[in-house]
Length: 160
Image 1 (tube, helix red, strand yellow):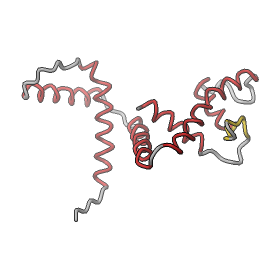
Image 2 (tube, one colour; image 1 turned 30 degrees about the horizontal axis):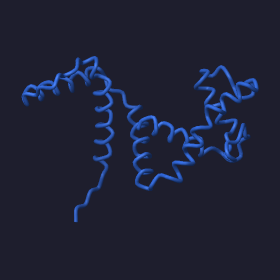
Image 3 (cartoon, helix red, strand yellow; image 1 turned 90 degrees about the vertical axis):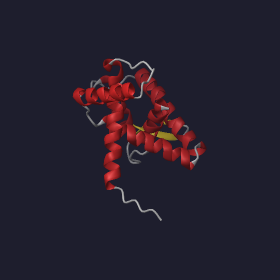
């Protein structure tokens, strides 16, 4: 699911570029701009290469890497239901938002210890992973909770 959201997000990113920008290539008539190519190259080469400096074989290779996201975006727009699109967009937004939130090891350790206390109190027979194993998931979960709590604080809920 994460890979799907990542590809969908890249596709959406690539499909919302400036129409006036110079075209590097087209995929089924859809433009990939030089600006898009340079953004990808900046990530891939850590800023060492640009579209203009790239040899023809490198340009082909780069476009071959970028084309699937364009193709997936088109198919997704056509075939996903509005509910599925909503889920994909909200999942992508949540992933993007939580990536910006930094959770300290001490926050994660506190949550881990609380989880262990609850499991012991509930007399759980499930083996609890070590803190080092659980830490990445705990940090992701805590970041999601922070985003959700922030949204809920701003929400105006009316029950009728």
